[in-house]
Image (cartoon, rainbow over all chains, first blue to last red; front, side, top):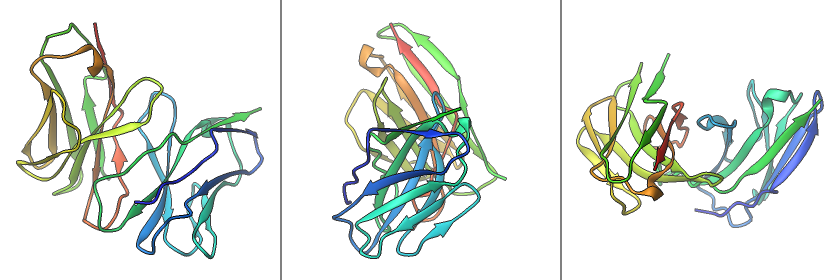
Length: 111
Length: 113
């Protein structure tokens, strides 16, 4: 499974969009990009995933570059409750059961 | 809708004592089940996963074991706890064989003294 690289931390102002980058330059054609987040002292929460196309749901948008070597998670209107560690994971469709969580990005939303 | 339960929420145990953590899932059948551990300030480490009753795969050798006595029940055990077993234990579930959308429980915080 491809390794992902994320910034260690980032700050975001409440009400503004938060753009979280993820680099996965060695991703292969059968690997999805998954995003999870973990609020302090809670279990991780699934946010969104995609393969090639951009995706949007009620929580966030996922923008994947055409060469699939990087992606950006967008929280359109950050709230204080979005403060969490965000994990970007590249996972093969045939290696289910083995999500590899890295260190993630600590996002702090400030008033 | 599906829900996942873990208990207890917190646990303080002496070194050398046994351990039993329980996880149950409601609202789905034949889920894949997982146990993760998160040490303080660290990332999540997959410990065990199960695709069905009695079927357990271990990812990391340790003094822990897992069992799945029923379709929606997953148990993490130890005969003798070590100090290094302290951490945040998370159970998760997913369905099918072609997705990694896993849904996590609230976790059990274990402190071994």
